[in-house]
Image (cartoon, rainbow, N blue to C red):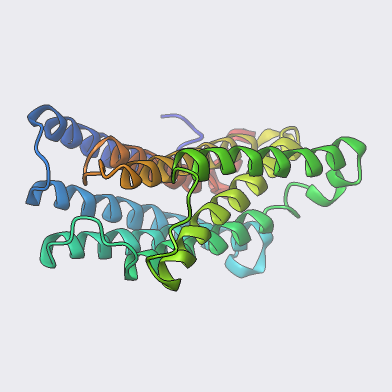
Length: 273
């Protein structure tokens, strides 16, 4: 057994494999807008709930709110749980209210709450990885300037120009406009901060945090791409529950869940032996 992966990590991997095989059967049969499609959408939320609970268990081992790492894992895990709640609400609209793409809805409220929680979680990692020290260096200051600019430009092109056709719809009311703006802004912030943390901490703390941070960053990148594809397919009116876009969301939440399972002080002790 890989010393970097705990039993809970292997549990999450096993659940993802089941989800992947399930998705393949849906894809091969070409079914759309069926109860099974909507159940798969709800199952994404269940997988994410498990990932969030695993993260909270790991946070307790770091002392919970008594340590920066514990706080970080708590907020990252809570972000997973709120995202999962949004997904389960989305599935409720699908299964019981017969609404294929509920937007805006209560699901979006839960989704949006995830962004500040994830952002706070990443920021709480900064003391543990010496981010303040790294930012005093010239290279750190350059990264602090360049990475947000690159992310903003990339996000404007992908999320606005391509994803929404370069148009902000003002006809849907103030609530829809809020979510239309909140989603891309949240993606920009979390991706920028994650990229900064990764680039400035790669060689810190003997490398223990290196692997979990790489996994967490990959998860947020995948979630960013999933948000982009969701915006594009809904704008083009080609989105269907349990399509390739939902597979991307499933993979993103799986990777984030595995990343949280890696933040385990017991694994740190094993890797030092």
